Image (tube, rainbow, N blue to C red):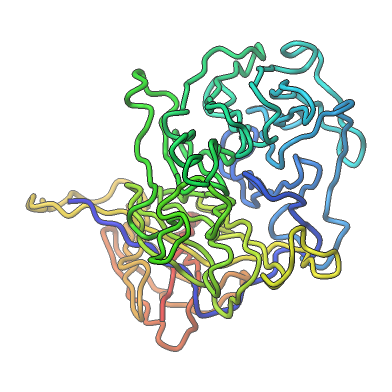
Length: 468
């Protein structure tokens, strides 16, 4: 059977990633973190984008040096605004896409832009209709819901928003090359509810947040109890919905208290205000849980079941807008979050209470399979290989396994999240074959560490998480 382990650092305080970025919005994806480069390979230093791509920060830069903050700007034209999210064209990061709409009309869509770093970016007028792929909503609605890119499509949603009395919620497929809306899926059976409206809630609730992980899209809204994972490349529409989490498991539920004024109404403006949904590589997903005291986020299992509420070390009753995973095998894998003002503040947060910056918390998850099959003795390894330490996460000891194709010296070093070497656990001659080394970390604090196995001119680095 398949098993999962999920862990995060709830011992150490958040680490500051930069002092300068502020999401500047409050719906859907507050930030994007680009984990892969134009070639599709994982970036050694993932990149944070905020405010529709107008702010860029390379993770690993000096948090206190604002010269590392790259900016751009653009003019969308009269009446048009953009959502906070951004998506870059695969193979060419000088092109990017933003979700736009008019607050005064029903025109919404995706704009393609030519990036001008530290300057003014302009429309790519050769794409779509004068640089835009558009659709018409039956009301002005909210300006959020994408974009995300998988394969040959840009994905976005319209968001009828809570004030519209008409049902409506569509998932759009936009051709990455041509800039045309090629398909749409009506999701109003999930995201529109006349019953909630009659009970004092809202008619429509999103989705306003849309985030990709692998081949899947994760959907959420800050004014709905619904969270979904969908497979946009499914051949049949009935296979489009992989799972849906809504009221019923008491994790991220709306109006679930015994004395709730609108019992179990799903579409409304109430805690936990699930602003931003993000998934890790094993498809665990989290969303901020705001206005629930010293709770940082709610955690969902890979099958969508609610696991529970979690808190970062020292977290208080604060504004909690986003938690975003980086999980691509980089030295900076973990959770990235805001660190906002007291929840006693009104919205919008007063300027003198805004806490600029992005913060980091260590995280890891693993997926394994336990089988009844009897292991067969393997032949001598044909190449140098290092496997994930086990157990991981661990406390206090873990085993590192590796194989060498020939005889030679092997060195194993351990580094902390700051890149400092904290231990050498092997430095010896080994014969060809399979080997194991155990590291006892009882004298080390909880957190994310990296181990490097060096054999001759070959080197392999992997991540591990120590729990306490």
